[in-house]
Image 1: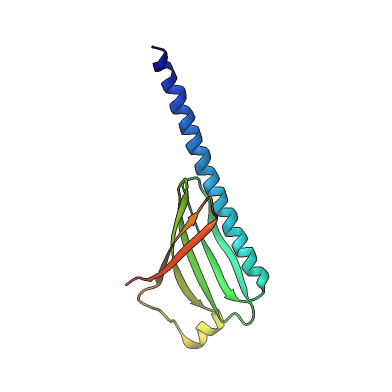
Image 2: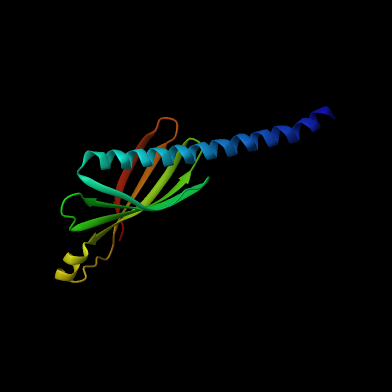
Length: 137
């Protein structure tokens, strides 16, 4: 009878630990992404701008605009969808090239059939990202 009383507190404790680990994983991913963008901006070659960000406990998604610092004839829109886990976060997205408005007026509408997709994994405890680029047809 006494063991049965311990089951509910143990399950509740495990659920609380899991929720805390999920929250920590999400926070560490967002912090690492923010640091990476700030580091690339600080180098002075690229302009990295996070135009959309929706952080969450289990999933996060957003968009990042990348453009050269000088001239800016083009932009690269990087979308991402992150699924947070306890030990790692799986990230995937697409790369969408865009022309500057003046260049687009000069050459007209440029469209492509497919855009490159990318996948990655961020290891929460080590802070190490691994990424790969795939072409989707």
